[in-house]
Length: 212
Image (cartoon, rainbow, N blue to C red; front, side, top):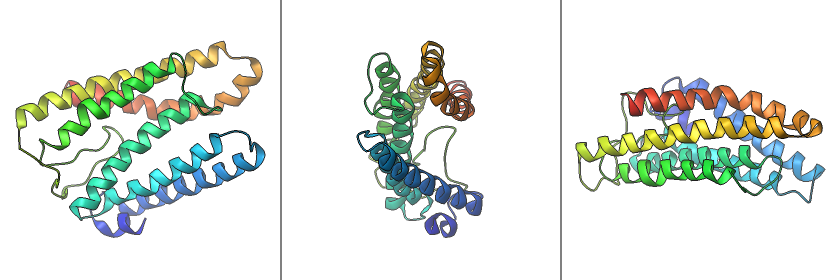
């Protein structure tokens, strides 16, 4: 959080730092409580791992280009980890149709965001979730500045991200609709809390990366 607060890379550094600390604390506490209440379930360990990834993602607030790159990769790991958590809750393994959503998520990073790092002078975070303010650190992984290729990769990333968000919404709603009454009571808070973020995430991909 200190890196974010003093780095000058993100806008609204104080608020962002507070949210970062709250997320790490919530995930850590939730993971420990889950492990204590359900020691046979691996979901608690997944929450702790997600908290560790959020900690790594705080490096995206650093003005140092290498640390910033590591932090941005951490942001992607957080997004992929959060998707995994939503798909498996309250279990630990992705299965069935959930792999289609996870595949779209991985495609967003592996086929769009990751190769984009090597052809763009700037490192972009997950569209609709994070990004730097005016002074973005230079990209230390830049191999060749190729604006045309970068534009294509942004559209590829946007297409996969839109599929990721839409697929996640349909999966969560479908799982809730077909669940037992007891399972609905368990998953309803997850569905309600995730829906707004997933909606913004998806709309931003369509408006910024595809139509922009």
